[in-house]
Length: 104
Image (cartoon, rainbow, N blue to C red; front, side):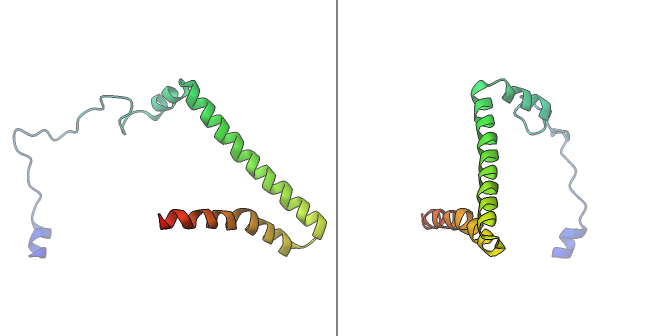
């Protein structure tokens, strides 16, 4: 039965059905030009404030982690201690916050 289905030619579209997909009707369609979508997002001041604040907060977080690691290595000279700082400042809090989310 499976071999018969695999070898059967595809069915031709009926005379009333159109073979071409419909043209996009709004800029939010998936097939619309991405440049139009980006420019429409840039027009919203509240979105731009959100985008810039997220960008700056992420950059600040990375700078902070670099400074903490650099200071720890400067104080101890140990790569092991530097690794522990990374584990305890990033991995453990993420794990502890994820466990209640998994249980919910």
